[in-house]
Amino acid sequence: MKYEEEVAINLYHMGTYFCEVFYDQYENGIVRTCNFTSDYCLEYCNGYIKIGDLLLSD
Picture 1 (cartoon, one colour):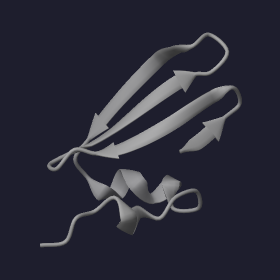
Picture 2 (cartoon, helix red, strand yellow):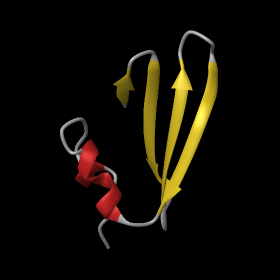
Picture 3 (cartoon, one colour):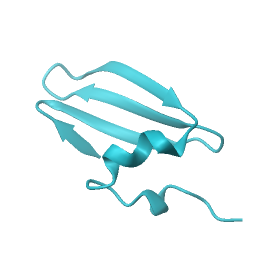
Picture 4 (cartoon, one colour):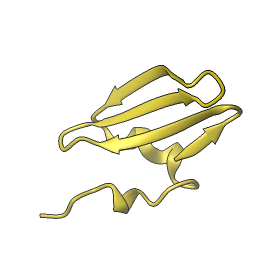
């Protein structure tokens, strides 16, 4: 989980794609979602979470 002002950003690995859920803690609701398949988009998360924890090895 990463925070951007009052919004918590949760990142999920869904097997074949990634999903970010932007959750406003004060309004108690989801304000945006973002889906992507390229791990290139994960570069900005590197300082906040361990990307390897999301990826499943065969």
